[in-house]
Amino acid sequence: MTTYTVYKEQLPGLFEKWSQQHALHVPAKLREGFYDLVPWKKGLEIAWDFDVAYNSPKRFLLPPRETLITFNLKTCEAAPVFEAPPQILFGVHPYDVKAINQLDQLLESGAPDQNYVRRRAATVIMAFEPLTVSPAAFWATVGAATAAHGYDLYWTKIGPAAFTVEVGSVRGEELLAMGGPLLLSTAGDKEGARRAKARILFKARRSGLRYNWEETPRLLAKCWDSPLWRRYSQMCLACGSCNLVCPTCYCFDIREEADDLLEEGIRYREWDGCMLESFAKVAGNHNFRPKAQDRYRHRYFRKGKYIYDKIGELGCVGCGRCVRACTAGIANPLKVFNELWEETVHEH
Amino acid sequence: MAKPRIAFFDFAGCEGDQLQIANLEERLLDILGHVEVVSFREVATGHSDDYDVAFIEGSITRPEDEIRLKEIRKNAKVLVALGACAAIGGINCLKNFLAENVYREEVYGNSARWFSTYAARPLKSVVTVDAEIPGCPIDPAEFARITKELLLGRTPWIPDFPVCVECKQAGNVCRYEMGRMCLGIITRAGCKAACVSQGAHCWGCRGLVPGANLDAARIVMDRPGTSRKAIQDLLRFFLGDTGAAL
Image (cartoon, rainbow over all chains, first blue to last red; front, side, top):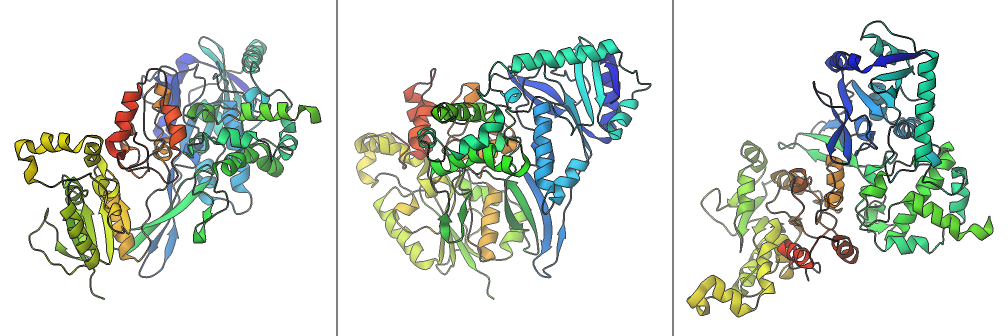
């Protein structure tokens, strides 16, 4: 794989060029302790040491609200709506790249989600090796410390003003070349990148699962009747925050609205979440997960078992966003999985 | 098919919800093109008791309001509560936490005995309400959507999840993560998290979300740096008629 070395002083020029044809998003500080990917503009200070982007990158690929079709109430004709503006996400941590790879697999399989697929194709992912670890994060222990693919360029900060950039796609390399002649990384630069990765991995391993993450589906299979579900879910506000901030949750609800003349209409989708009380409500007002306990358990089975059964990896990348977002303090895959492990330790 | 006849009524309230409808401006003409407005004091003169849909603003604060409301219920095929006062009692219910002689004296002074008044309540405490457009004030876009749903013969839908959902959709930083208090965790969404998106917090004007976990909410709100009095005041502000207010 080709690796180039890029210096900080080259970035404003590159950003300027990229932003002419793409919506460019870069990490920036929102307020003390809060960072997010925000639209780049000249002079914006990049928060290289951001621990986690407050909002997950899924919103760029599966927006909170998206029109799917337009229809005519009189003629009953319908037409699909596809919006896929070219965009660059600069500064996506590997666990978030991993989450996007997971969305790719799940939304491309079966009947491919055309709106997602098109947005994804128009999106350039520039991964960035983290420099700090969010206190709530545990990605190093759920197999999400590295992303083997899914990025166009992979940036690693190897010094105060230097980066190595691993090429993941032709598209990525072309974008990088817009800044002028490219400089191949020296062996020393590559070694610097290796060390940077090892350093952050060491920090990230400080908290995490007490067992090998691949055991999670087997662990959960034993824990359907655990008292833990009830204990935690008593505090559940059913607000869906854990779902909505999750980079791998992709459920949505579909609604329609007519225009004011009652002639045309749109069908759109909006983020939904399995922790919301009405999520599993069906015709006749039947709810097949009516209790907070049922919903709470479902989410952990989804993250720890159902997704694994489909694609062989956890549905949780350990970003820690749900841990922070849960006002009731009960959304915490790390704590839940570790406690279930302790509970069943005599059986291992 | 004859156009449905609609009428607007108001009880104790500021008529701000009808003002929100008037604020739809050009859109209002398109929407009202499908109906015949027989009574809309805020916008036009004239009145008739022959109507299909009644939009009612304001809460019930006097015994004689009940008689009038029941009369409207009898005339209307569909009765829609408009705004926080009508749907959940709203801020009128603040007086319910005072002794009757105290609020009567406060409002009417020496003339208190000339006026009848009793504990404020939402419409649903007196009659069956078919649909609600909650909020203080209402979101004109939601009024438009629900009116269209009624016109198309659909069951009007309002969000049945908390404001947190719309806050996450908007990408706001959670007030609780900023060490502040917010009622979004128990309040029905549909406002697009308007107050939080503007830097404030949720006051609960759209009422409790169905199935709100009040026990958990009290524990969540009871944090270092927050006085119980402040929590109580916030819960009483709009939610005085619900089980949330203590």
